[in-house]
Image (cartoon, rainbow over all chains, first blue to last red; front, side, top):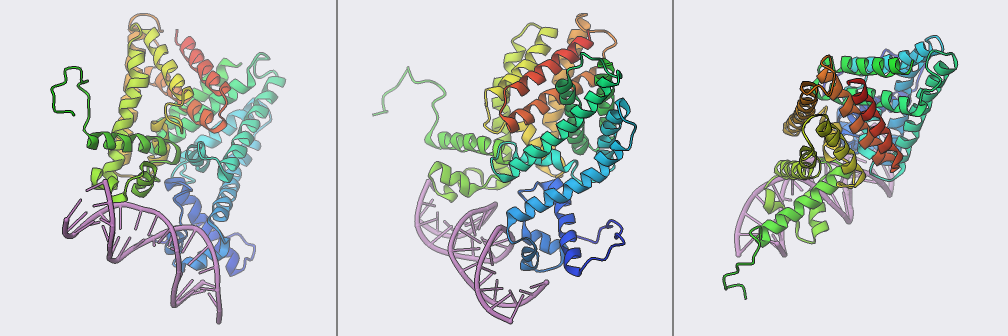
Length: 208
Length: 208
DNA sequence: CCTACCGATCGGTAGG
DNA sequence: CCTACCGATCGGTAGG
């Protein structure tokens, strides 16, 4: 691979070892979003970075550990790019709408080159019991909890109907967002994100 | 012996080679629905079937070919389990509803042990250009075309509103069905299919 | 369908 | 971070 633009270096000082560690995880996240977390190999990462295989291995000591740290690094990106911007919106319905828009924007902006990292590993590990699937389950629950919390807030404030089925609305919003992610990635067509936006608008309008 | 003419012999009697070929594809579909089409290996299939690696290899002559034939075999299962039963319903809205229900039932019945085969390879190959992705694209287009056709029929018959956005409704139904598949597979909770059913009912009700 | 093999790559270890 | 290595497995070939 060629040198790709990196995130601008944060002002804090890192040791060389910490920098390399972070660089490995950066490449790992991008690769995993495209080819899956199971297709990650230590040798491949070493080639991409131009170091020896055992040079990469030394940072993680097992493939499982590499996979888990890659998920953890992706969580930080997701928080920074989706959750935190949305939580900056005013509480209530506006914040719920901001979260949905932040997700669609994150897919459109290509934060991960293979689409949403967590949508990828959901489909990859949904039927493969083990520690990775448990992580996927936890992330899925956190996402649904966040959505339900924002929906509940909007209901409490009278911006959504008291009779709203909170779990059902969270399901329908998630379905629109995640399917939008898969189709956008497949077709590379910006019109797909608009389908997602319309679905989100419709689901929210019906709950008013 | 088998030298005598047999009039009772079913015409679909296969040679041993054809039977083995079909058995390999059967295991390949199941495995791919769980672990992905990229994780299929010839050696693994050989072990599962109790034959030699090159015994399996001889049937396909390349991994690509194995993958493509696996997709083709899965299409036949999908037709038999989802599309054909739905097309047996009366034309119009009833047929559209039958298709959605047939999909949810196919997921619930565990036709593939890892959930819908095509949802799996959609997520797996959406960002990996190549011949497999092209197959995924074609299948996705066929699915959307079928949905849109049934929606259009229902509109023509006055069972759905003339103002219905056909493409948008097809998107929303697909989103509910596919997300239902991923979550059902992840949680192994029958309540998820009900979320899907409710989402389908809602989307159709709004288009009436 | 088999045995016997090929070069490449896998995750991981030893020792520095 | 490196070289050098381990046994296992990969896709694929040769010859039967």
